[in-house]
Image 1: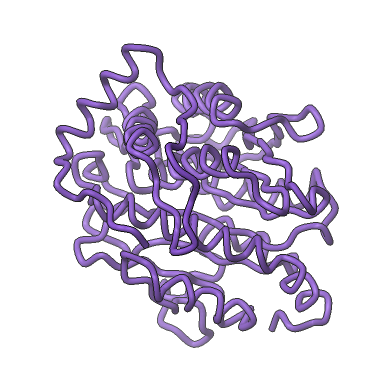
Image 2: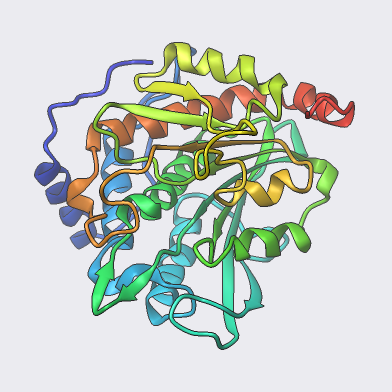
Length: 336
C-alpha cells in the first residue's frame, strides 16, 4: 500500500474537520487519481471526513448513543443524512429498517431500534451483494457519566462512511450494501433483526465484512476474524495482509479458546455466521478504554486508524473481484 503522511497530529486533524464542518459539512470527496493495483489509499479529504465523522458520533451531544435514547436518535439522523452525501442510495426505497425489542441498557420497556441502509450498485453483478456493517450504538450514560464509544464503535461507523465514499466514486463489480446496525450492545439485536427479515435474497449475499473497534492500537495490530470457519477466505486475507500498512493478524475464531477470546459471535457478524453467510470481522484487541468513559476521540491511534480503514478497503476490493468464487465455495458447502 502506498505511504500515508503520518506526521499529521490529532489536533491538526480535528482542526481540519472542524473547519470543514463550518463551511458546509460532509461534501462528497473528489478523487484526484484512480486507485492503483498496489492498494487503495484515502484522499486527504476522505481522511479529514473520517475523523470528522468519528468526532461527531463520539461527541457528548450524542450521550453515548445508548439504544432507545435521544442520543442514538441523533446519531441515526446524522447517518440518514450522511449516507446519500457519501453516494449511497436507499435499498428499494428503504433507508431504515425498524425493529422492536426489550432489555436495552437502562430499562426494560420495549424499544424501537433502526438499522440504517444504503447501497452502491455493482457495475457487473448488481444482483449480488457484499454487506459491509458496523454498529452505531454504544452504552449511553451510566452512573451520570457519558460513555462516548469512540473506538466502540464510532470508529467502525465512520469507516463505513469513508468506504461508501470510496466505493461510490469507484464502483465495484458487485453491489455493496452498507448497514449501520442499532442495538449491538443489547445483544446483537439489530443484526439479528436484519438477517431475520433480509431485504435481499439470502443466496445473493457474497459475504459480510463487519467493522467493530478499528481505531485504537498502540502496537498497530488489526485482527481479521473468520477464516477458521471459512478457510477459503484465508488466502484472500493473507494477500491483503502482505501489502497492509498495519499488522493484520488471523485468529480469535477457533473453538476451545478461553472465555472471551473466541470472537465468532462477539459482534454483528455472528448473526450472519448463524445463517451460513461467510464473514470477516475486523477489530482490535480490548484496550484500557473498552466499555469505559475513557473510550474518547483523543485516545484513538490516528495513523493506525487510517491505515486500518485502507486495509479493509483493500479486502473489499479483493473480495469483490472473487465474488463468484466465494459464492460457489459457499454453495458447495466449503464454509466449514
